[in-house]
Image 1 (cartoon, rainbow, N blue to C red):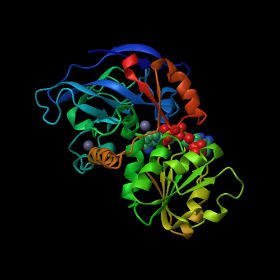
Image 2: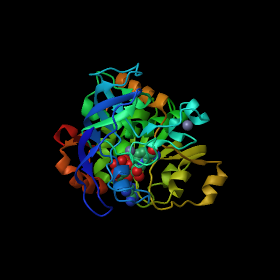
Image 3: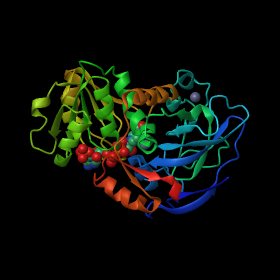
Image 4: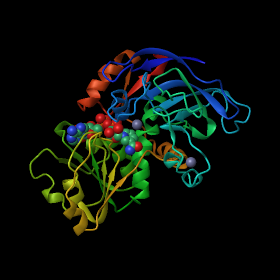
Length: 346
Ligand code: NAP
Ligand code: ZN
Ligand code: ZN
């Protein structure tokens, strides 16, 4: 199926128009016409080969909202015309322990990412959602609550689920104190979701101009981390810190801000190794954990939760020709708080 989109041809070239073909729909496949796709910082790490495994040409994009245009004969859950979402992965083995428990994101045979993986044939690189359409197995296609704006829902498929899952797994709710570190695409969803769970939320940010926004998003407190001594008053304060920072940083101050037994939940994917001092971790039995998006059942539960609580992303809608500029602005922290591409313009 002929598809138009944008791709990076090399790590050091801007993204540019690119035509390619998708597979014909198989029995369990859904063909989706893409309306909107969010720009995640992972798209930038990936197209610039910062993680070292990018195959070019690279079509990024894993915050996809579209409409079903056709379904294979064995598809039961979805039908043409329905609004749907596709997130960070599009296939998994379906038989291992992780898949069996709804943690397809941790498939023991290796999850197939929406971009940056190989299709089931083992030779065709997966190409993402900066495109007019995509073909996906029904199991990895989500329904979007009708009351949510389509474009503003796109970031739920990555930024939403990536922050929802660790917050849920940590049992964050009424009476919890949680800090969100880095107020970008993930961070602003982390604030909205943690607040919707009833937690007391603190934003830890290096950007003073984000303070008013943090409060509007649902944070109770804003701490400017670039101020000397900013962490001094926070020692032992939080049940959990959700670390969404996209670049190398030292974790020690954030670890020290945890209550005894508290967890620093790392979701930011800096390419360089991170550092922390051992003692603050040892002395209070604190933990550092990692989390990669979320499984299929969690993703649908997150979308339904957002429907119930009217939660979407704060977005800036752009045309494909603005993608490269949007990357530069994201790198400067100059986005409120997610760019979303109008894919009807490809
Ligand atoms: P983003 O919109 O660029 O936000 C990152 C935020 O981190 C910035 O707004 C900034 O917040 C802070 N920051 C950036 N550089 C910093 C630095 N040098 N020092 C301190 N703070 C800095 O990015 P995003 O889309 O939210 O993604 C964040 C990270 O999560 C990326 O590495 C991405 O690849 C990763 N990610 C992981 C998963 C997963 O499954 N685990 C899923 C999606 C994305 P302030 O201005 O408020 O300080
Ligand atoms: Zn992402
Ligand atoms: Zn599996």
